[in-house]
Amino acid sequence: MNATALNNSLVAIIQKKEELNALDYNDARYDDIEEELHDLEDDFNEEFGDFLEDVLEDVHGKLKSDTDILLPTAYLASSLNGGMVNPDGEKEGVWVESDEFPGVDMRLLLVANPARFMVLIGDQARELWKAE
Image (cartoon, rainbow, N blue to C red):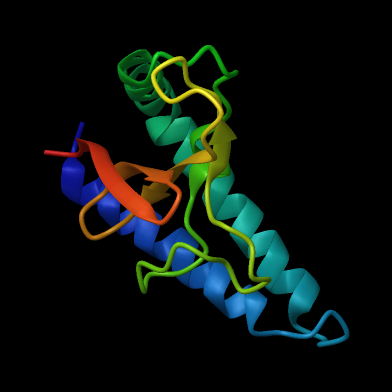
């Protein structure tokens, strides 16, 4: 797995998400940008999906979580700024349940620069895996 290629693909997708989020639904470019985003996500899942699904299995194992593993693009951050709250004011990432942290709101998030999976526990963020 090429960590640089993985990160570059993540950056491209997240930048496209930022571009789409900046548009109003009525903007004439909205549908085209959305289609470009879906194409980037499809290419990403095709190229890195199997590898990242294995990583997600390891991450879920570390968390002692039996929550279903989704496609890697489901975990993508909405922006490159490293914020943990999306433009709608909701926490980023995919909710996971953990035997290690029962009753705690936890989310898994795939971020770029460098490519890594983070777990968000309340207001805390902890790196669980980093591409090398």
